[in-house]
Image (cartoon, rainbow, N blue to C red; front, top):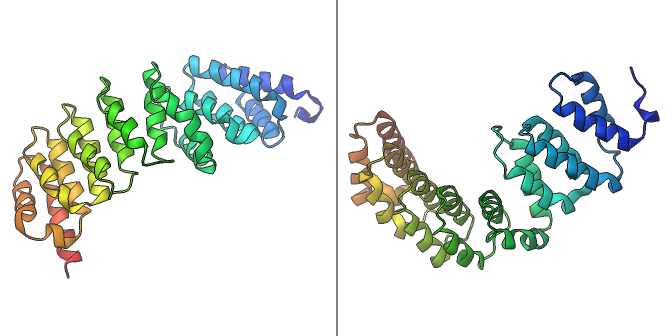
Length: 276
């Protein structure tokens, strides 16, 4: 086995990046270099590592992105957040669980610094970066963000409007402006945006939104109707156990779609259990 301790870290980093991008490379050696550099890489090599990360993203290599992003987060810490978020914003087909966790931890470690990066990006011309910034704002929320989110709710990209609905769920449910914006998004032409709004409203459980949620029980989309039942599952039994909301659930239990019926039945059962 090669003695990596005798090699220059610059050379090793370049070898790691090249090996990650080489489909015929020696995986065992790549893993050995990664292990050797983890926790030991010099901070002055962060810019070189950032360049390799950008190359991996441009090549569409999700595995190389994951490895290099993890190494960068460990080497540069909070200062790496802008570069990591830019890399995260590109959809390379993986679930990005590890990178997502890293980014949220770094942002919450210094919310003020994170927000200085995120707020300008919410208005940038790159739709992927705009969506990423609006998403991460949900992990470092501030009441002033509602105005930013209200503007983004008019974005022509439905993915961004869906993220807006999700990020609103992180805001105080007592904030009337945030709640009103979530309700407004229930009327969005995009099925996914309506679902995201239902998800956030169910999470926040504000009684005054129940009539708005229930109105979507007649939505043309079965997925949306199922999410009406899912949102209602989260409300206290005192809000869903009887009256108009219970009538809506009873109607959804007769829905032609089996998934809608299952979710409505679950909502009714949970309401009955909590009401005991």
